[in-house]
Image (cartoon, rainbow, N blue to C red; front, side, top):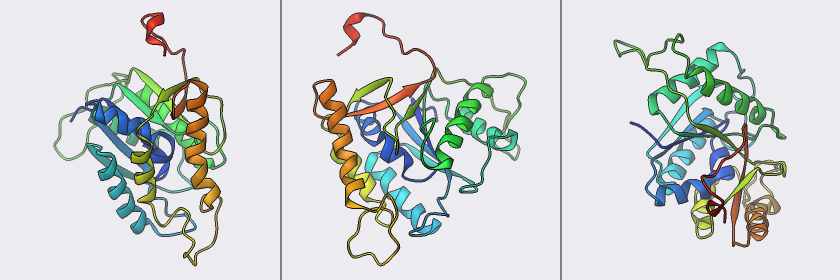
Length: 240
């Protein structure tokens, strides 16, 4: 299956938090989108890997993504090395996306920056003819594929975006997908330990950050992204 957009997250829920509204909008506009989670989030203070798997499947269904996979890397301990790069390369070559979304380049959680670098490096390596990969068994060798662009969504830190996407009308779809992770976010009845993301303030911040970015471009809501090379437009009229 060829996808238009492939979004990677170090943990289940990263993609929804960083780019859920953008993904919902792209799908509504007819694009095929997939998600690949690098880890199962097994080190999360609340819940378990099994619970997160059910939650991520529910979130994917709510967003309408075409496919969701989990590479099962070690939460907190995966590395940007040859072994992990090749696993990501296999996903890129399998789905042949034009656009890749991935974690913030720098963030509070150590897996976010590391995951960002891993995916970005794999996008380059995936285009090299002399790197051989296959999906196992007697399947054919995979052909090289390099996405046209890599964009990094914004997570915990308020990093200045290089561009923003008008996601007005798609925030509720994003919030529904986030709420699918009931074990992870604000729940006044939960008896589990509090974490930085379980406060009501954190949940509220998802909306008010999008409102603030939207305010800056004169729309209701927006999501921000950073880039590795200059973003380009075909004409001045492409800017809103």
